Length: 237
Image 1 (cartoon, rainbow, N blue to C red):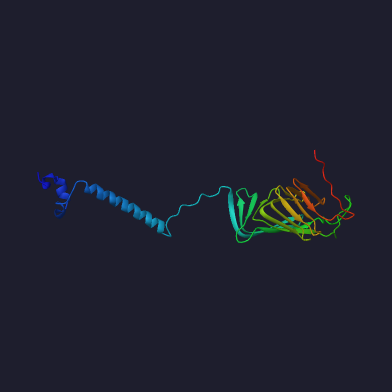
Image 2: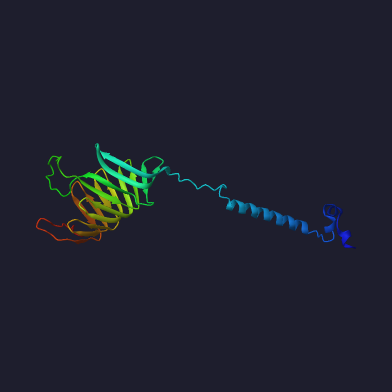
């Protein structure tokens, strides 16, 4: 039987005369498959190269309610300026309790004002002296988080604190608690005072009101003791 007799009537009607001689039954499905694959690739290529095409939106962070840029936050204590915090980008939680300051071009930074003079000796029951010197401390960190309810500030990563007397504290985590005006750290901290004293410890707590510094863990101290200076070391169990 000749090749022409093998071709069905439907195939003859739907195949041009000049192709009937070369037509094979498997050609039509193959051509259809190639066409479908080609169209799919074409749509994918156009989408990938279209700058105004629909982009898949990033899943929003459910904990973030607001985001601001180039922010300066000021706080007061009994009507007196108490702190300033500045950052290139700020995120506020949905409940507006936590304010997170992020590092972009610059590190988050700030300053505490009107701190009790930890250099001045005074009797415990002495009335407040309105003429007493008020101290300040400025800080920088890679990240900071302010708790608006407790009014505490947590600084993390690359923390540097410098007082107005040029005392310097370096650590990777520091928490400022407004209620008792203390600085505390649970990470290895280095302290250099304006009196040329150098200290290192695994944990640190500085109480500005009581003018007390507590060091825990592996402690290293390098200083010159005067007649009116001393160090108390707790006995080991």
